Image 1 (cartoon, rainbow over the protein chains, first blue to last red):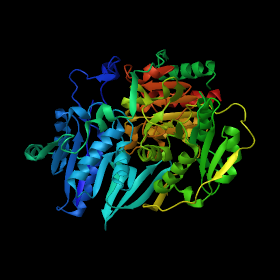
Image 2: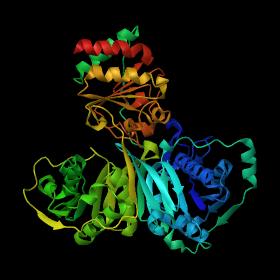
Image 3: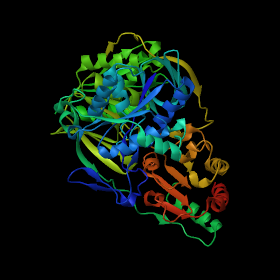
Image 4: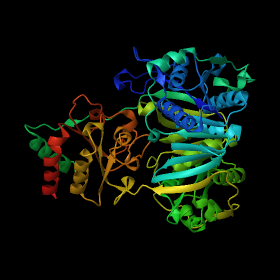
Length: 268
Length: 324
């Protein structure tokens, strides 16, 4: 079998709020000094899900990790290769810049089409920067393959994918015929941590690069030119900022003072 | 400018879900004199139509087929697409729910249009339809316009007001076809039974985070909820605490968990990461209890207590009980 893992490099979501800045002229996040971009955490979980299936399915399963991004996204690809994926594919073109979920899914689908023999696509439930959660479903629609979202477990057997999905009030297991797309949530568990030897091996694994032309995509259908959602404004919302600190000589006093304050505010 | 709006409704206990009523209120305001339609799917759909008319709809597209009671994307998307074709709306609204998360992107791709997810504000003006939504884990918000039509948006529960007065007693009902084929089959379902009061229904929520140090910390959280009243307070948890297995996933509050808007939210040993605040920032009063006085949570809180929860919660529980 051949699996694809979609990986995105994003600004580190653990960036302290004090270091999070926006350039309101360009509507872009200003990269925080000294904080390196990271693999979007849900994409790491997607890779973990694909690797777990590969472990049960056997070594003739190949995993290709695809990222659309700049040259720096090689780091995200290498991380998934170090986890155990077999090959990398970077989709890099200035024309891809400034796109939306639609153009991203268009580019990724074109690459999946180009690979030709893909049985399953694993994506994170959402990229931890824009938090949209659309690209996986977009690939599902563009490829016309079944898609299941927010998985906490993925199994593959007999040409079928079985997905345990996280719902608001529990879980449901959905079976779909393959090829299929799945998006993975944090409930799957932590992605494996590559060993030093695996990191060194990853450096030697093949990472191909493709442009819009290589994918047969017209520049007008991708990036800012092809985007259907136009970002008008990116801003940092205001938060309250008027916290009354409850003082006291002892925890007992603090507890009494808090209850008194809540009663005075008519909350209790 | 008058424009037509379609709401993809959800039916709960034979009536439009509360979030559907909120969306109908928003649709009524956006329509500005235009038509508001709603889709209602499932065995109880027809019976929910009158309540949907009262909540703001002029027309209901009803798929009264029990097969719709289980959300199967292939079946729901066909019904939604049929309603869009008939109503030709300028915008389609749905809830940021298990259904909306799944359906909105699919519908956008089917219709060669776009969706904005998890919106907290939707408006219509000279530049057309605009939607504002949190991103970067809640650190930022983004406002989008749409280059294509219809504009599709999923909207966060409790972000929109339902109509104050009933819209009308009657509307037009249009039948949708019975559910079609589905590529997927549901092989099993597990209910995560959280006993008693559900998080979203609670007027008070007490949530614990990684700083509790272990699952036993949640026993104290449960005692705190009980002291506030079992019929009023529910216990939530941060994603970190759920990922560590300390508390059930069903009780996770945050961007990828539940969004709660209680009157009182008590965050205990939670640092206040943006993705957590995205799930509770709509609470009327937030109380933060944390050992670290620099914790981000104090920026969003109305009242703060710098203390070790192990020391302060037992006397707090006693003080609440004493206050009755």
